[in-house]
Length: 79
Image 1 (tube, rainbow, N blue to C red):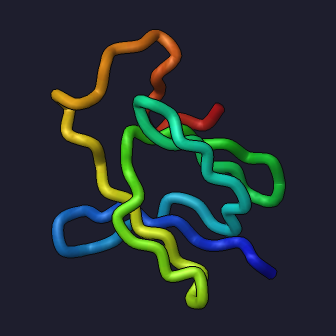
Image 2: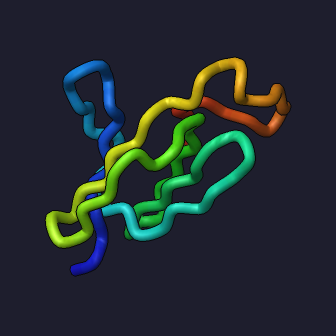
């Protein structure tokens, strides 16, 4: 199995966002995650750290001033 769990860095802790992520698509306003079951999630974040051997991807929220307003931009919302 090659999929990874994705976590959001929240201060000193990490909160799991999604398990078994197979695809990460970068967008100007963030990242779209898709798991092996087809569930999708868009988050205004960037990749902070990846440890593929341990199947872990850590995300960090984008600063609000760096995210452009867009009607298609959903924050932590399932698509």
